[in-house]
Length: 471
Image 1 (tube, rainbow, N blue to C red):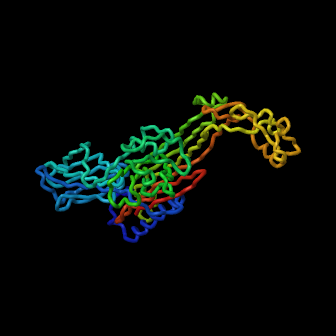
Image 2: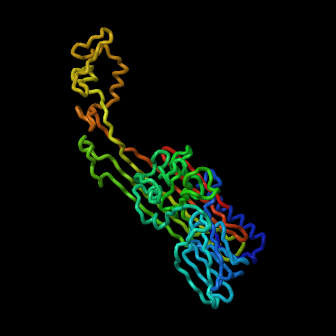
Image 3: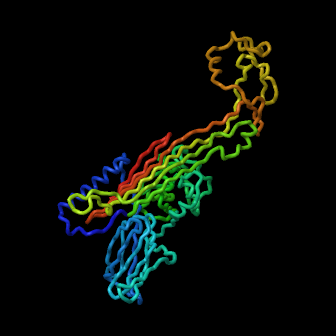
């Protein structure tokens, strides 16, 4: 994903080895800033295959096939075999351009080849037209490709859908409810709900059997509940691939759906975005029960700001001449989001001691049926005179403890079900979570693509840090 084919034949082997070592060292030091415990993860790469034919359907062997990543401009080259087939393996998800050349045929350029996570994309037979190589036939769009390589039942959220569809809590799990075969639940209010956000039930499976991953790393709540505990900034998500059922044996562990969340990566040009989302109680109306209980509008504030930035990563060019910084061999992408939320809890309806009861006077204390609550003397078994407990009979420790309770603010009130109460209150709870993410990669001559991806979620209740490495 982060590679660019280039010639290295003119470089001495010793210089190339130093270059490889320094490149790996720079990436390692950069990743060490945000990575605490590296772990090997399941791969999210796929493959693109097909066969080259002539206008009569005969296979064309020896055709030059080039695959270019539209974002990073990484290039992979192959030659079709004796059966006319080609297969690009271990390809990162993204949008690609396929170029096929052969003497005696026009050059074919196929654009907008979209590869999703863990997909085996079979392009089928690609027919070349007779002509000169200098002539180019560009195929911009084609019909839906029929899946013939696997029996997976999948669904996919594209980057356009993620960017254009609004979500209340800016949580990617809200968009999963748009997938066919999922349960319809309310949107998530915000980050910070317990140990993660609830995932929808997919294809009738139990929720705890779903396995969510972020860039191939298990992101589920460790106890096995149906939650996504490693949150990711929604603007940092490139796509979401859901393997609903009937997938290959390599996706073991649980029998439910597999949710693959893929983060964005850097490209050949610098690009980024910054944003700020706000929700405030000043823009809301008070609800019916608060108005009835004379409660003011509770604090309801969502202040969410963040940024994303990516592009080519400068690498020192030691002992090779030319420019001091090499910008075509590595890319990076970082994201940060700071949600600050204050959400109201449900109102509480309770009964607290009145001012008279704190003084030992129960002459005005009545139950929900309107009958006087009689206080008996435990020594005589008879009611106290006037239903008043004298101060000489008080336990002073208990009397001091009564000062902790607030005084009634709704005397004689009742709930909708008829339960009596005299105190009504509502609080707002603050939570701060910080979804962070980073991604970097490089490719040197004679080596496969190296990528480093890390995601971090820091919260008030739980703090977790995880990383993945694919080499």
